[in-house]
Image (cartoon, rainbow over all chains, first blue to last red; front, side, top):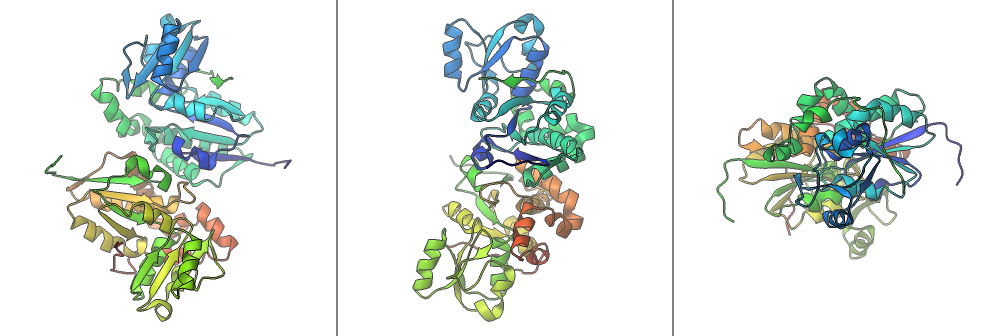
Length: 236
Length: 236
């Protein structure tokens, strides 16, 4: 069916396991994994990485490592022993990644990217590129799906509050609408917590997991808005 | 492993499709389908129904009808033609259900009940029995899983805000704790909207669906707290 549409739909999906019920291949999909994959990908782009190649498993990352690629890889928050770097945004510093191709595997983030890879476009979203992302989305004549990576298919707060930030910004533009309860609920959480984002991310289950491995220092960076103007796009 | 536990865990699951990632057979599962299955089951118990027999499909409900049972059945909000009554709480009036056995099939609610049927206990939750439910849960030495029926596996606001009400009440008792982001987010939505519950339920996608069939009048009942002191339990 061909349609001329007046307004663009916004939808939020809280888990990769729910994506099959909401997926629309014509959508732009914003993949979100605030703690830490999509924040790290933004950091890498800002540091001048040439390419990030997401792969869906540690095994696959290891194969790439054996072929000579630089590999960023973690499982359950811990850097895999064969990997060059882990999954903290600070791992993707210019001296390490500038001009390089990085193969990247994480517990939730890269798997989620792969799920959306047959959609019209896949773009990475994090607080790091919030304004740049919103500006770009508004320039596109496409419906928007914000896909939260969650944690092992579970809902998480950090991705949801980011989805709410994007939803809230787009709904201020009369070209957008939503009928999606997930979008509305995430907008509510954003409006409730936008002025204490860092503190809000401290309440998450993922904070506890990161802290066990001494990695929760990254939350400050991941809660900081607009550290880059670059939008990382997925290209096949 | 045998443990003596000091505190009881609270968890919230936003969709039947996520339950496999959170399910624990030792839990008490509170099944929630505010608009309308669990509100209707509470109404039926208050009306003096003898038994509610949930079945997972309209076809199965039809088989029971042919065996002589009274059948309440709907698909996508509309009463199936062979059914005696639909899925509005007002359908379960005393003159229709008192002392009777009702076979019950709905789009989301009964399927969700079946998913939890092998857990330690399954109890129905709605605003209708909120205080009775909380009192009973507190009397049990068991972890609590609040399982939202959602809509065709999608997240919905009405079940979530109810999950938040239960979470908030239990967390005021020092015997409970949560590390679950879904529980925390639903508690936030409850605290934000508890004083305008009826208006909040008017913002849901399900309100639009019900309105198309002239069935949204039930929202007033479904948003009313403590219309019954009875807790419907699932027994095998």
